[in-house]
Length: 128
Image 1 (cartoon, rainbow, N blue to C red):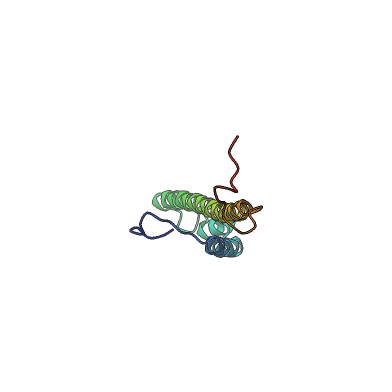
Image 2 (cartoon, one colour):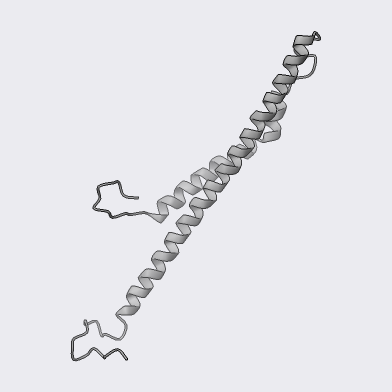
């Protein structure tokens, strides 16, 4: 989009939008290899004996594991939202591209039958 103060005009480049979507998709694909929710859960999980056997250690263990579950949940939501943004950008780029192609075809169709000349009063047909 054009920056504010551009006389109310907006501009876009569907190729750039598509490129951003592709870059985001590459990042998302990399997360699937290096940062799966299951891998994150496994790295953050503690065994019951990791903090000791006394009461406070066992309570801390439960808190740490609960926190780990919440982190994994937040990460899953982030990945889901990231995927949705990527798909939305892809759709936006496609919509702009298709709309531009349709608009250009319609503009070009307006000139058909005019022999390359604009209509004059004598060549224009009345609307019925």
